[in-house]
Image (cartoon, rainbow, N blue to C red):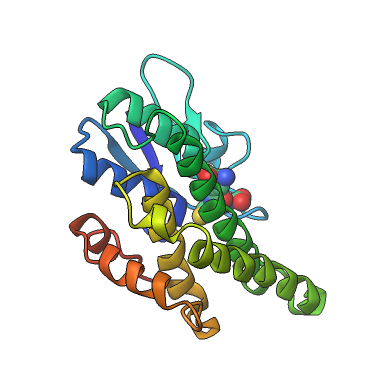
Amino acid sequence: MKLYHSITSPYVRKIDVQIAECGITGIERVSASGTPVAPDDAVIARNPLGKIPALEREDGPTLYDSRVITQFLDEMSGAGLYPQGPRRWDTMVVEATADGILDAAILIVYETRVRPEDKRFPAWVEGQWAKIDRAVEVLETRWIDHLNGPFDMGQIAVGCALGYLDFRHGSRNWRKGRPKLTAWEAAFAKRPSMVATVPTA
Ligand SMILES: N[C@@H](CCC(=O)N[C@@H](CS)C(=O)NCC(=O)O)C(=O)O
């Protein structure tokens, strides 16, 4: 299988961490990039949305959207990062919260990197940050016990989302007023899978 990949993509990082944590083999990484205004042709040929990660398989259509890929790899490896029973839905909501943080964080990056300066809209950027701020607050107040519970895909997604906030939006300081999430992230970031996948500019 071929994983269309970039070291700076936090969605790809979720897959990289899962691969490392679950000892998954047989995945070749293919370097890819692209933005909405400068898409990567090799990615578009496999994912019409032009987004990575995309996982090309020998025996079926290419998988895309990171959550489709993580569920596929979980089933393939039998790792159980999506638990059975009621905790499954908690795991998936935590993961969706983390991915929503990433969606907003990346739109802010595109607004400053991709959009021409005279077309930028600061209130829209602040609206995206407000989504992130509310979601991080809910991780602190509602989901901290889940995060401190058995290892699952929700935790990987949150670790990657908070890592991306540090990488691209460090000056916003998501840690302020969130001592529990700060402590959780400090411990989670020490996992070898996280250390091995820290994004670099
Ligand atoms: N919902 C998608 C989001 C993936 C995504 O936005 N990836 C970014 C890289 S971090 C991308 O490929 N962007 C290119 C574009 O938006 O055209 C997922 O979870 O895989």
